[in-house]
Image: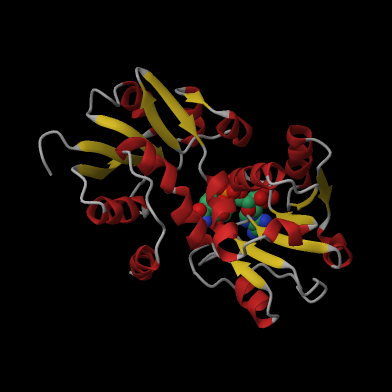
Length: 278
Ligand code: NAP
């Protein structure tokens, strides 16, 4: 790394769990850039000062992770995606302005494009399980890609109703009990809950009523093969996993900071899989 190396970082509290340094470090090596990507563990009370002085600290931009994504939105100029999602996860400078976006939106859709080309033609009605931050990103992406009806199921029904207020009648809050009936006309199921994650209960839903052309996506990536994805594969349904989304969501930050649009390759995936196994 030279004196003039461009630097970016991931800011979180804690930040040890973040895989972003593995992803960006791999691309920096692959493209032989004079660049560096660091972890910055910043407590909530220090976050505003850290971001206000981001460029003074030598950074051309940053990824933002838990618990700072909402605060980052208010400290930058967010695009429509970040506004709708209510959280910013990628920051970069344009001249003196600090801009932000939420790349979970394109991470989700680009991964689906890679795993199941033409998925939006098969989707018909979609079912989104969960109504947290990542559900907002997924719903934004589905609307952008022309999905006309998105049924949202959540443990706390008020949060699903809030998504209808935010996105309009394209979002229909529904109850778990309605799933078997709805699944017969569903072409895409997306799990955005933390169910199925290591240490969490599995997501117990029966995929049997789904049509043969249906696609199942899971945002959970630890474990890589969630019980939901295993059940979908057992039925020969097309799937898209959470690791793919994680890799694709990293692309735009790297491009904005370092000027190269990186590729998501099997080598990168294998590297992060190994890291997740540690
Ligand atoms: P969040 O805002 O905290 O939302 C969590 C969601 O899970 C809520 O809908 C919550 O329901 C539901 N939930 C949690 N425990 C539950 C339980 N025991 N039973 C039923 N529902 C439960 O979290 P998030 O940011 O949306 O993230 C959700 C998951 O997506 C996490 O596993 C995260 O790692 C993953 N994720 C992956 C990527 C990727 O790139 N692959 C990106 C973002 C997130 P309530 O509203 O009722 O609490």
